[in-house]
Length: 330
Image (cartoon, rainbow, N blue to C red; front, side, top):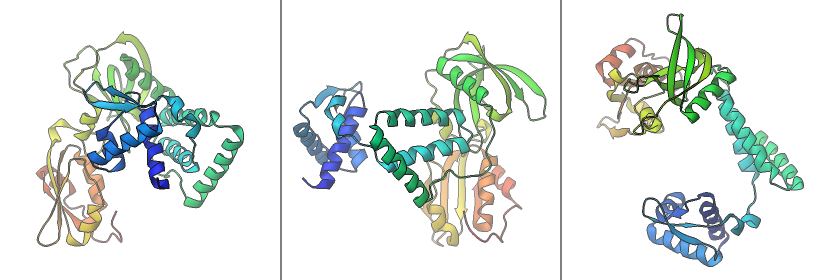
């Protein structure tokens, strides 16, 4: 067996341990970029190398395979690149205003290193620091919202426990409004929004509250029942950025000039986008989403190299603001 194949086999064994319900053929195909027949051969090889491999039937009725942790404990090792990636993620969360999540990830990092023998951990951290320095890996500086850690913690606890939250919210006109909300989730981006319903009205539409405008948050004893049909991922996918207005949701079509088409192809503007190359070499990007203001912020960076074809309201918003003298594209 080649070193590459041995490495893949160990990676597969790690997946079979890490996923408590086991790993399926479809997941192996996706993880390793192989076809089903190859995935079957990989499972067979894993069974020969690890006799403790156990076939199980998952909740979806599909066959899966799992390994007990002891099967690979002595084979596991940490790489400096992995520790460096954790440090980078901690820094990026802090820069994004996600201090609570960054602190949780930092604690996880320490727990992982606590399981490594002291001498090896010291070498790992030395190599990791050198890697960060050599590759220039650092969390991006820049503007970010400032959020009180105690408020962020109260929001997190309310979401986990399905408990209502009493907040003092600074509205757009500067006045302070007292509200009781049932928080469903948090959307992260240039700004952080709390997705919630007003407490006591489960039929009410979901609303979004800017986290940095919450000046006080108190966890209530009152609980709420989360809508079982709600998915934070599906909700987020309806927006271009973070904020969304249901009235704005609809088809969006942008045309990038031929000289900007290749650069635009490097971007995923929306997970459900479709791309079309026009006869003149320009690029048409289509998707469905809301959030015209955040679209405007992004489109401005493209200067006069992008044209809004739809919707009309967005076209009006960007009209007259397309600069021709930007020296570079995003």
